Image 1 (cartoon, rainbow, N blue to C red):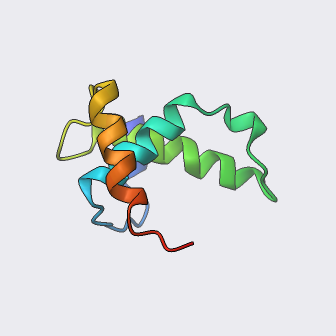
Image 2 (cartoon, one colour):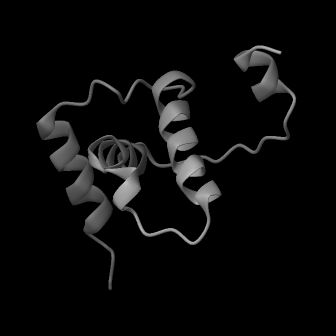
Length: 84
C-alpha cells in the first residue's frame, strides 16, 4: 500500500477555514517544534503533523508562500475580535 492509498482508505472530514485562520495555523505549525508542544497522547502530535502536511499539498488555496506582510495581516484579522 502506498501513501496515497493509505489516505484514501481512512474516513475523512472536510473543515472550512477562513483563509486568515489557515495562514495563521500554517505559519504556527511551520515555526513550532512539535516536540515542545504539550500533548497527552502521541497521536496529538501526529495529528498536528498531518494537518501541516494537508496544508502543504491538499489545500485549495496556496498558503505555503504567504509573505511576512500577509501573515501579519492574517494574524491581525484573526485577533481583532477575539474578546478574550
